[in-house]
Image (cartoon, rainbow, N blue to C red; front, side):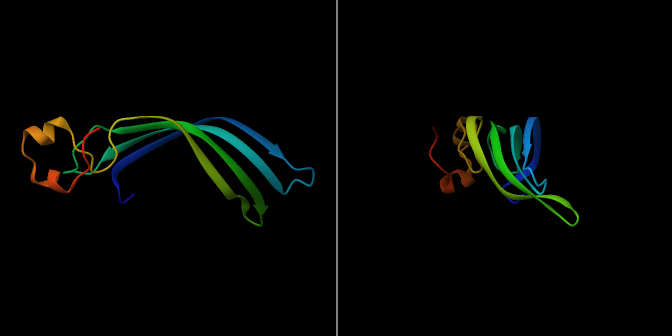
Length: 102
């Protein structure tokens, strides 16, 4: 995950509708994820929540995503490379290449 040191994704509340022929399906589920910054990248963990709408297709080795879209409902924390008050107070040299604080 190039932008993050670690991530954790939790999904729940699946609603799946399979087509009459049984080879395609649509699905919606809830996603809550935590993103932990890489070492040296200041900021609070980024938490997100939303839902995913997906189209699935059954193939020779099982079901696969054909298409999916995340609708972001809320976020909390800092995106990668965000400035924090602490990095500004320390005079962090990396801060000169970062985004302005919110």
